Length: 362
Image (cartoon, rainbow, N blue to C red):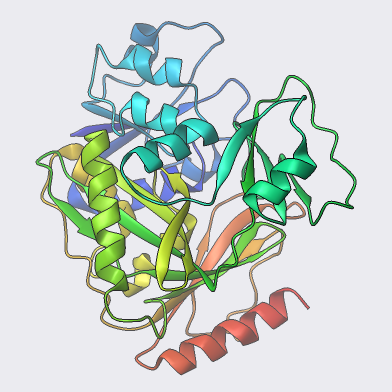
């Protein structure tokens, strides 16, 4: 089976590396100016032209049997243009919902699942009054093209300056949530509707970007894994979703609120490459190819540390870590790789993460 991936970044790279040993073939679609270095050597790369038809792109990709995307910031029209020629998973409709914060939050709420309190806003909205209604601090986020802290503004209280939001940018406002922990759940749904979930992961961010993750999330109360999995199954079934979907979660007083959904393999699930019986990348390609999903058990505690604009450390610094390098040029803040750590003792893993972060980001 040949899988076509829209995009040539690190997630495409890791999907291919997980699928090639199973005899799957891969082809990649590069945008007009996209750097294909992360996937070079893993399969044919087709560079699309502006305004090119879906049929032409499909032929250029070598007529893949199924198409997926490595990123959520992808043109939905492009995905739809490929549907007459091959199944596209996840479906463009699901990607469209997750691309737009207001649509996404409304979809989540429609399934009876909680989010932070929110409302759509425009240039006439009284943000001070809204902050008093939804709760401080008040976060203003663009509905589209907002990720890793970009296109987001914050008002800590009524005396803060009101941010100047561009008039042509659709936004929502969210009330602050006094969460205890940030967690995520990586789930996969096959073509047959079967759902598997990985253990909940605890995530730590810096400047809005994921810095490191611990899995399974330590010291979780009983029942939280089951609650998260029930939420994931509800959303996956409502979408009739195929592939990996990630729930980014706030834990508040023993209950979950969903912060965001990611319709793809996810940074917080990279630890599964070393710490789970089947990694998230393999389960995604299994799902979209119609193959049985693999077990998601995590025998030992694991962690992932992102390499954000830094060169990989010497193997002598953390010899037990497994480096995943994306073949990208190093630029400040850019995700260029990650290191996975695994040990039978969770306290050892946590100490290794702290030592590695101190070395990478003094």
